[in-house]
Amino acid sequence: MGISQKKLTQAVTQLERGDWQGAHEIVQKDEETPLACWAHGIVHIMEGDIPNARYWYRQAERPFPPEPDAATEIARLRKQLSG
Image (cartoon, rainbow, N blue to C red):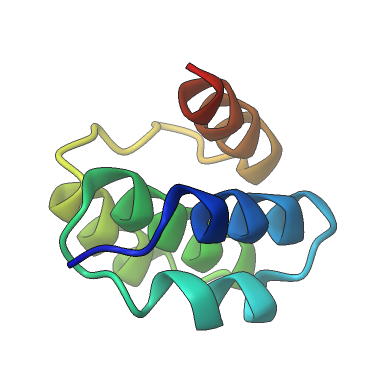
């Protein structure tokens, strides 16, 4: 079972603040749902661990951006969560 929408929204807020460690604590509890996997990939972009980020994008079934930019990806994820 995945994390709640509320928890995922909290993780995105932490990403927006630059707190990838705090976001990681939330999203690592959900290794199945696409949005959590996408957030997990963004965490690793911010961390600088691109191979791990690529893995999580594959899990999310999302193409990995040619030039990964955390801020752009966070904004896209936020938009997706908003509906």
